[in-house]
Image (cartoon, rainbow, N blue to C red):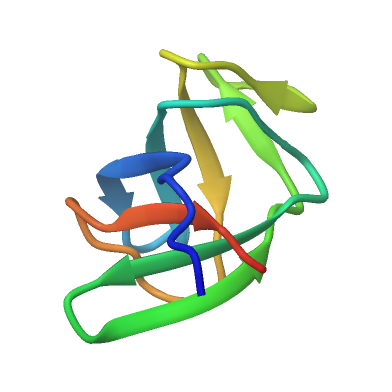
Length: 84
């Protein structure tokens, strides 16, 4: 199984909001399936909402730091990949 290159990395985690801030290495858009992985912990999620500079957006590009709501904790340093 080929390892896909990461979409980005979690740089901040808002526990109360369930929101991960992801520094993007490549484009990500609402509706994309992502896999969040840190150590042995891994989960798959669908991007249902995204914010850039506290404003809702439909997509982010390389270099952006976007806030994405996820269903499980995604701590700092977690790798974000495209889910197969």
